[in-house]
Image (tube, rainbow, N blue to C red; front, side, top):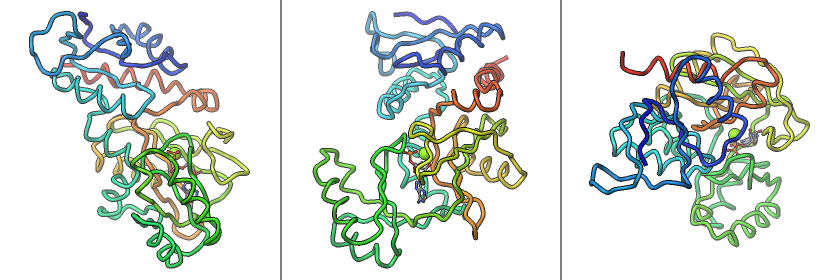
Length: 290
Ligand SMILES: Nc1ncnc2c1ncn2[C@@H]1O[C@H](COP(=O)(O)OP(=O)(O)O)[C@@H](O)[C@H]1O
Ligand SMILES: [Mg+2]
């Protein structure tokens, strides 16, 4: 399969976001070819095989839903010399919440107090040191899935027992976090290149505020401190386009929770009227060789 456009948009399913990105590309005269990842195989390096994905594209915008498919299709496309936005290194760091926090905390960014433990015994012992209530979350989750709060040892025991029956090796890695004392909202801030074009509050009466879990999107204010913080975070991870989750801790101010490398933004556009799809495609266009 030959892809001739200079820009590819790789996807599994066309959601609202992918449709908006493809539609707006036409408006700005950017030729973008959609690549359906289920309908092709990507050649790894130029090994001369016929009838697999061939392309001279300069840039591919990664829009796969599954983290694993996004990361691995990015890795394969990079073998063909395509610059993928986001690149494989920043995608793998963002995919792993522990790796993200490891890098950010090393460079002095405020993050939730976090421990990682590899046995139930260690969890019980160190949860006490961290102090209840604690949050347990998968290192590679999204949409608020499998995140739980333990208010005491009995709840922690139940959560660990549930985790032990989930057939996913990453469930052997227990990330324990302080429960951050925040208002009834989080901030989702978007970075595109060197800009911070838009942010939303995710407001919820529940402590898990993901819009996939019923959090309501409202336009958020981006002050200088927040802008500088998320730009620094993006630079440290080497990520070009990102949705960054920030908590407002009552005592410590902004705390960076996690980074999303293939962010959804339908609710952001609906709540703010800001055309993030346009911003993203203009950025991609600006990155093409002149
Ligand atoms: N340590 C924490 N303290 C308080 N709330 C948290 C904490 N960790 C996660 N949450 C809540 O759960 C949501 C989902 O957690 P997050 O780490 O962003 O995982 P996901 O990748 O599933 O979005 C956050 O947006 C926030 O509302
Ligand atoms: Mg999140």
